[in-house]
Amino acid sequence: MAYNEQLANRVRELLVGQSDVEEKNMMGGLTFMVNGKMCVGVLGDDRG
Image 1 (cartoon, rainbow, N blue to C red):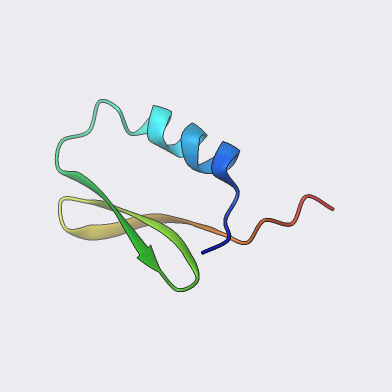
Image 2 (cartoon, helix red, strand yellow):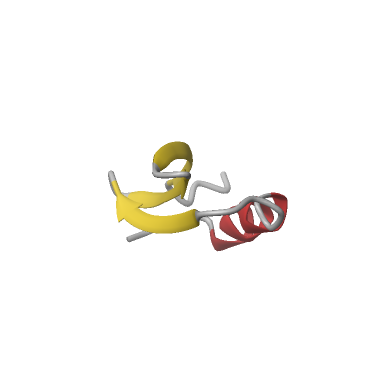
């Protein structure tokens, strides 16, 4: 799956203090789940 790894790392840093964070490959990108609910997705790798 192609997604912007730098952006995914920034999201990871922002979610560090949250409990029950899970990452899933969904919809052609990386989706972050918090407490079992979709929170944010990182899609594509356009740096254009």
